[in-house]
Each structure stands twice: as C-alpha cells, then as structure tokens.
Image (cartoon, rainbow over all chains, first blue to last red; front, top):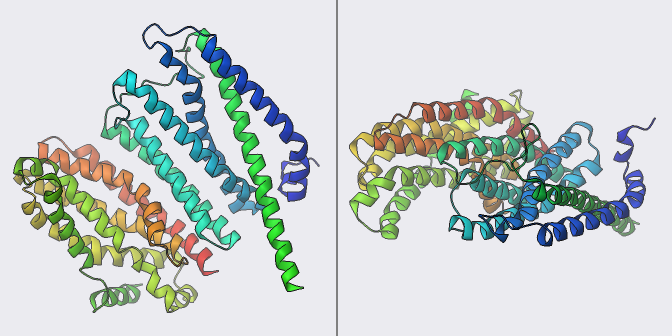
Length: 243
Length: 218
C-alpha cells in the first residue's frame, strides 16, 4: 500500500513534509555548523597550501551538490514526463535555483583558492569550464521556466530541455577534456579507491557534505511546498473571479 | 516532405525571407574582428579559423527564430501538424531547409572570408571540411531551441541562452579540426568526434524538437 507515488498527491506531500522538514533543517544546520567549525578551527594547516586548504569544506560539497541537483532535476523531469505528477515538476523547478547557487559557490570558492595556489582566479581548465557551462545550463533552464505562462506547457518544455541538456552537458564535459589539459587536481574523494585526503581533513569534510546534502533537501522541500501553495492560491483566486 | 522543403526554400529565397542576412552578418563579424584585435597579419592568421567558426555559429544563431516563427504566426504550422507527415519529419525538413539557406552559404563563403583574415594556405581544406561536418549540427540543435521557444513573444534572447550552451561540443571539435589543420597536426580524432556529434543529433534531436513543438501546439 505504501507506495512512493502516494507523495505525488500534493496534500499528502505537504502533510508529510510538515513532519520531515523541521528535522532535516535542524540536522543540516547542526551538521554544517559542526563540520565547518571543526574544519576551520580544529584541523591543522596543510604543509604546502597553508590555511587555504580549508576552503575544501565549502568547495567540494557545493560542487558535489551542483551536479547532484541537476541529476535530481533530471529524475524529477522524467517522472513528470512519464507519470505526470505535478509535485515532481514543481520539485524540479524548485531545485534549479538551489543548484545554480551551488554551482556559483563552487566557482567562487574555487577562484578564491586558485588565486594564491595557481596564481590565477580563472584558468580554462576542463573542470572549471564544464562548471561554467553547467552554470549556463541552469540559467537557461530557469529562464525557460519563467518565460512560459502556462504551467503545464512550462513543465513539459523544461523537462525536455533538462533531458537534452543532460546529454549535452555530459558531452561538453568530455569535449572540454579533449580541448585543454587540466590544472585542476583529480577527485579528492572516491568510493572505490584509497582516500587521497588525510583523515584529519576527511572526517570534517564528510560532515560538511552531509550538511550540504541535508541543506539541499530542506531547501528543495521548502521551495516545492511554496510552489504548491502558490499554485493553489492562484487556483483559488481564479475560482473567485469566476464566481 | 520534398514539397515542404521546396516551399521553405522558396519562402527563404524571396524578398523578406532573410536569405543572405546571415551571410552579411558573417561578413560584418569578420570585418569587425581586425578592428578589435588589431590588423597584424600574424595574429590574425592564428585566430582566423576560430573567428570563422564563431562567426558561422553566430550567423546561424541569428536566423534560428525564423524557422518556426512565421509559420506559427500565420497558422501554417497547425496545418502542417494535422498533415499526415509525422512531426519528426517536419522538424527534420525544417532543419534541412535552414541548413541549405544558412549553413551551406556560410561554408561556401568561408574561404573568401579566410582570405580577409589571412588564413594560412593549409588551413582552408580542414576549415571547409569542419564547417561542412559541423554546420548541420548547428541547424538541428537550433531547430530544437526554436521549437522550445516558438510560442513566446520575445523568445529571441532566451533562444540564444538555451541554444549556445548546446553548441559547445560542436564548436570545440569544429574549431579544433580547423586549428589543428592550420598547425599542420593530425586532425582525424576531432574530425571523427565532430562527425559523430552531427550524426547523433540528426538521428536523435528531431524527436525532442517534435515533442517540444507538440507541447507548444497543444
């Protein structure tokens, strides 16, 4: 009976998130505060990078969420196209600005770190370039949402754009690899290899990542609820005008 | 399908169809570049292939909103949609017509503009090859953007914002083919990648364009 599709019902979604949202929000704040304080004040400086290494606690989680936000939008768009649940379309819409800000944070913290370390704020490195392109994709997606008046048309068109955009974002990622050699270091974390980051930096980083994930979930839930209520309000106003 | 293609081509050729506008824009871009970067022929020779690719891309972009806009306004798009032709075929023919009226003239004009920019002699063949391979992809991707924004009143700027990021892989590989050609390097790999992207978008993207168009005609 308890299928996940129950939450496609906006009322059920709002009721459930009423209970979940405070927990997620509090947990995310706790994780972020704990992770950042631990990371910023209770870890040693790196022997080559000095204290600039600590920007990793903002840079890596935000970059991770920038990509995962797009993936979440992709899944939500697919659900909307296949099963036409409005909550799903609204969740995709709600996630886009959050993903945009995450991309921006990753780009900005990277630039701030790059100046003392690489001697430049910006280099046309594959990773940097593909993040800039991802940023443009977010902008286009949000602009298309806000340009179309009819809600269902907007949801359909942005979903198609999200699908096509995902393919092209992936394509661009490998194309820029081909186009220029990288300055950016390899992945700091991976599941299948031995860790590249020393344990002192690793544990606070994990907590920060958890904090960013929870923050993303909390923001998306909050924004989806706002969208649901805004739409309900518009429907009520329209009904009043008719009556 | 052929009738539709002939109709589109005729409409584009006749006065007010916008045929040649893209070409004129291309010429203006090529003329303005030396004003921006200075007239040293050595510098121009280095950047010529990249400028020609960018100019072709922008000229292509400018004419995109005409693909569906006129047919949308006078209602012939609705007629086409009710015709027995599948929507995927319609968008493919539209993309083909756009390429014949915009992409092909750009390819043919590129060598002349290459002269203006002091493109080295060994750069012509790879440049023309890369443009022939790449411009169909620009038209097909552009048709998708045009299908997304056809219902909007001021879709022009939004269209650029949507389409330009999608042009990135084509531009990277296309310009790389031309650049390596000028430098005398082996350009087989980017050439194959470019051809792969073009064939891929020709095969797949009409489905997305048709889906977007159907939504807009609902």
